[in-house]
Image 1 (spheres, protein in one colour):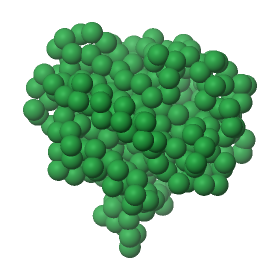
Image 2: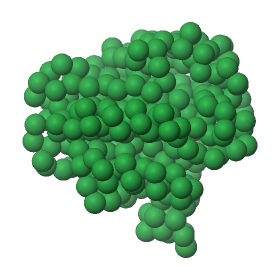
Image 3: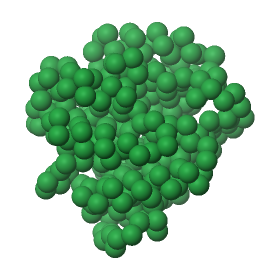
Image 4: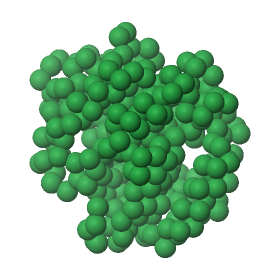
Length: 293
Ligand SMILES: [Fe+2]
């Protein structure tokens, strides 16, 4: 992560490994064929040649257990780049989930902490999992009272100031900020919106830090991109669901770009697709952006 002039990384999410049956989904899930999907990703990364790391947006597994964590480690172990994880609600379904993660999968985190920062000369990525209820790092499978602790916010603010001279700062948190617009879905109202209080918290942070150019979310299993003032808000479809998409970010001294890549043509099995839900993949503007500094 120390190249001076450019950097590339992959953002993928919501793999729900170990789900049987799958609970929430948008398109058909092939998490049971994940080994083949990962093999296609590995080939893509090797062919691309410039990827520094993978960011996983959370719900890497479907429920917390050592067996599922081992499965996640095994599935991502053969990639030529490291993977860093922002814990999602499905990763936190037991009271002691955080400890189980840190003891069993320390390589998915930095400094053995769930909130951490990846930085190089060009940018800083702040990983900050949200809380889902009063108990930190726990989801009871019901409550979605998304929030951050005061300590998390203070630490993020401190790090955003520390790295304010970077070309780009990126925040990754599992819970998305915005829902999908009616223009994207064709529905009467925005779809899969988040509680106002959480949105306000993020928007206040964004307002205070002009170098915070991207906020990455997950959880909804749908591609979304919109720009509010200076910042791009992005969510991604599930990497386990057809058509097996991820985001490819490129950052250099002149700008930042994001594209959405599908591995559908690179896998060896036939995958069904629900053509009534093409909004999951989105329009070109929901899937890509480029901004010059
Ligand atoms: Fe989630």
